[in-house]
Structures are given as structure tokens and as C-alpha cells.
Image (cartoon, rainbow over all chains, first blue to last red; front, side, top):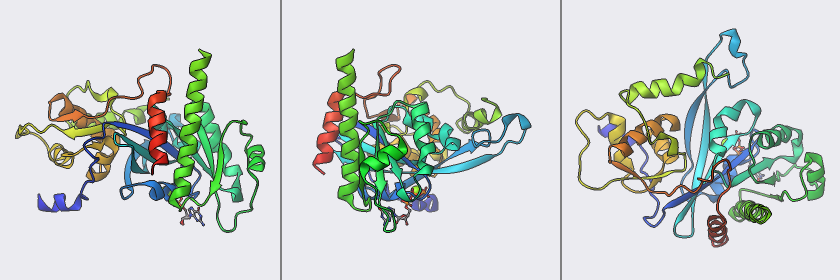
Length: 202
Length: 122
Ligand SMILES: Nc1nc2c(ncn2[C@@H]2O[C@H](COP(=O)(O)OP(=O)(O)OP(=O)(O)O)[C@@H](O)[C@H]2O)c(=O)[nH]1
Ligand SMILES: [Mg+2]
């Protein structure tokens, strides 16, 4: 028993006062900074799990009889907000072929941080399309600024990505905790505004 | 569209967990908070290694996804084991579901306000 137990990292439990949880998705193309943002905010070391998806979900014609499974890692972090609530941040690639994997994750989420890299805005189109097509999640676009990124104004990014006027866009270096937290705050404030708007409307 | 691949996980998990039905399963999500029930009751001798490790790991509150990460198992499989343990009274769901508005994925304003305040206090 000893070896199996010692391979398991010591669990970092939540405070006994925590009895609620919410989650935010962090999506974006490969290498855009998802893991970096989550790590900057998380109170625990990054954790990751693997899920199997079949080639039917990764774009191979299911009628051709070639079925194989592939695994996709999902990494996540956690931060306790207030005394009673745990906020989980799940990072996942947002491209179409991963949709089956994260559709279950989107269920019940506060919203999604959509990370974009201004060096390649086009690669964000697919991620944004997937969110719009499959969910009603409030989103906030996080422009992750790399040293060699061209500096676009927020409104230029909005136009390039064809985002609605009320979708918040924030820009910064998400390796810094304050900026990562700022992105989250902006998303939750947006979700709250939208929620209030909808309850007024009905 | 839901061809054989769709059944891969449930079938495998079903075998691993001894082929029982899982009524708790639908209410579990990756962020659902869980905690071992501390009443001194031991798992039956027939319980598997994963069940034992899971209960040990969950002596304090953790989310389902955290359990999966610590156990090095997929969330979908851990969900099945967890629901068995909840049904058997060994594990309790600690979090009240915050997303039970049918047909929507919106959360209550009170909760969102609390999260916002909490984030601003970080
Ligand atoms: N300069 C700078 N570098 C960053 C920033 N964010 C991330 N990086 C770097 O970019 C690289 C990729 O970041 P990750 O956080 O791993 O990106 P990811 O989206 O998780 O990548 P995948 O999971 O592979 O899709 C890493 O080397 C980071 O150190 C940033 O804001 N500024
Ligand atoms: Mg990553």
C-alpha cells in the first residue's frame, strides 16, 4: 500500500467553511497562455486530469469504422473567494474537435475567459464560434500580450473578432496575478450584469 | 453520431465498479464538492483500491475533479465511484447545487455578487 499512497500528492483540502463551488472555463488556442493564467490565480499547485475521447469526436468519419481513443489533458486550479465559495478554473483547448470533451464542463459555468494572441487572431475565430454555437456562456476576451505582440487597441480587437459591444475585452500579462484576477473580476461582473438584465426582461 | 465510442467510458466504469446502478451520478459535476463521512464506519472488505484511496484523500473537502487528479483517473470514472460511495453513505456531497435552473446555464445573482466580492478581496 505504501508505494501507491506515496505516489499520491498530499491533497490540499478546502477550508471547512466552504460549501459552494462555481467554475470558469479558460479557453483558447494552443500556447495562448491558459495554463499560465490559471497558475497565476490558483491557491493550489496546478492539477490535471485526462479524459478519453474517441476519434468520432476528433473529426474522423465514424462510419468508416476506424475508432481509436485519444486522451486530452485538462488542467485546472482553484481559488477560495470569500469564506464559503470555491472557484475552479478549468483550462481546455477550445477547438471544434474538443467540443465533446468540454461541453459537459460548460454546463453550470459562470462564464468563459477566451484567451487570444494578437499575433494570430484568426486562430481565435474557431474557439469563439464554438462557444457561441454551443453555449450561452458570458465571455470575456483576454488579450494575452507577449513581448513581440503587435499592440492593437481594444476596439481594433473587437472589430477583428467581430465581438458584440458589451463583450468585455481586457489586455495584459497574465503571468501577473493581479492581471489574471482582473480578467476574472471582469467576467463575473459581466455575468452579473447579464443575469440582472435577463431577470428584469422577464 | 453516438456510436460505440460514446459507450466506452460508461461500460468500462460499470465493470470496474461491479456493475451497479448509479442514481447519484447525474448530480455530479467536476466542481461538485465532496467530503468523506466521518462516522467511523469502515468500507466492506470487498471494496476496491480506488474506493479506499478516494475516501482517504477526501477526509477534507475536495471537488470531484481534484479527486480525479489525485487518483490519476478520468473524471468520468471517478464520478461513478463517487456516486457509489455517496449512495453507500461513505461520502457526502458538500456543495449545494448552484446550477439547478432548468434549461439555462445561469447562476443566481446572490452567488455571483459573492464571488465578485471575494475576487475583489484577493
Ligand atoms: N511574455 C508572456 N509570456 C507568456 C504569457 N502568458 C504565457 N506566456 C508564455 O507562453 C507559453 C505558453 O503558455 P501556456 O500557459 O502554457 O499556454 P496554454 O494555453 O496553456 O498552452 P496549451 O495548454 O499547450 O494549449 C509559456 O511559455 C508561457 O510562459 C504572457 O502574458 N506574457
Ligand atoms: Mg496549457
